[in-house]
Image 1 (tube, helix red, strand yellow):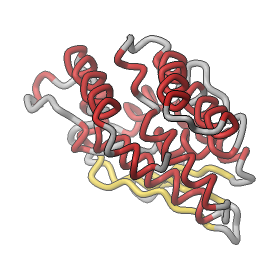
Image 2 (cartoon, helix red, strand yellow):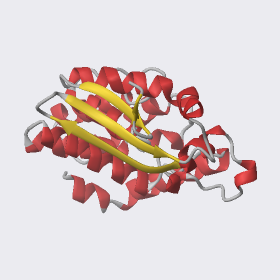
Image 3 (cartoon, helix red, strand yellow):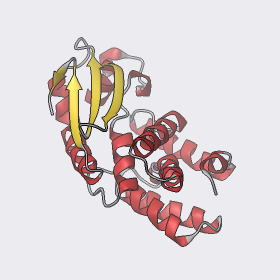
Image 4 (cartoon, helix red, strand yellow):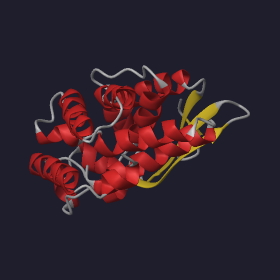
Length: 218
């Protein structure tokens, strides 16, 4: 089972779509194909830049594509329910047990409430997921009714994650329109995520940095 084959699987596409519909009903930002695709690309970039083998890169892309399917069950503990769902799906596709174990571990550890970057694939998934902050994730078009998550995501004009191998750093650089959200708003809802990113970076022998509007904050 490859990442490209997984993307063509109609059943999995249905689960991703329906999971995102549940989050839409709950007022959450976009968690559909744009999100999981971006997370897969970012996680793959991290491992590729750090010269991990192609197999590990393939596994992190699969984990990223499946990481939010647990929202189909419930938003609460979605990383754990998603890991169980992923196990069943991949086992039925006859994926080797060692590969399933790596993917399930990464999915089960991607949420900031309970997750830990226990291996490089999990670390790359965490960094890819938590760095996906962008205006296009906001589905509410009425600015007057934005909650803090809408405001923060909508305020992000540009977002970029870069690795400096020489200095062993990974930097999330954001340009924020403070008309919609302050830097403090960002920290109010993302501090736990940034802490998780710092620990994930450490697993990859990197130092995590956060730059907002040309000011280094972490």
